[in-house]
Length: 191
Ligand code: GRF
Image: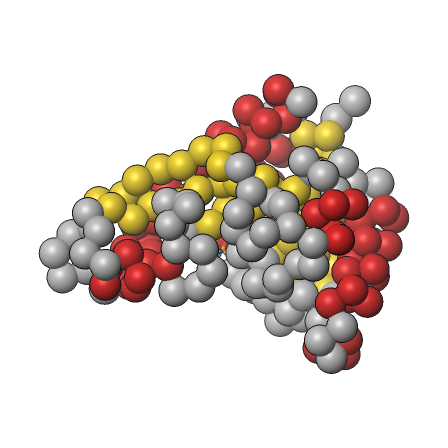
């Protein structure tokens, strides 16, 4: 039976598009069943619809910081779509530990740093400021610890002299688009 995948986004959704393409072309043995955004105006929602995938907005703002209530409604959507696996792809909401506990080993995330370095935000600037030779990206399992779950795959990207955070981010994003589908394919084949 095919693995039913939900992809959670907040913005442009370029990683989401590469995952959907890889599933729809048969490179990944899975089906993208729903794309969910906490941001109603995320450009990725229209991209998902154009690819024939249901797109749902669940605005976090009316929950006024009540993360548990937001996650309870998020969970209802995931259950409605009978989801097996969740891919976070530029999803900019911090989850409570309860959520990954409900979906143990069922949530993957892509993070734009060489974890365990630079959990959280502004990863590229932090790598540049530290004088690192490389930035990069990691796909990891999501646990209760922010950006802290086991790393499933990682790619390094050399930092060039005079790189801005935007320069580095653009080159890392190219690698994210290769890494995430490759790791997802392997994860699904091995589970
Ligand atoms: C990516 O760099 C991802 O690693 C980070 O946010 C960005 C999302 O880009 N967490 P997109 O929405 O997939 O285009």
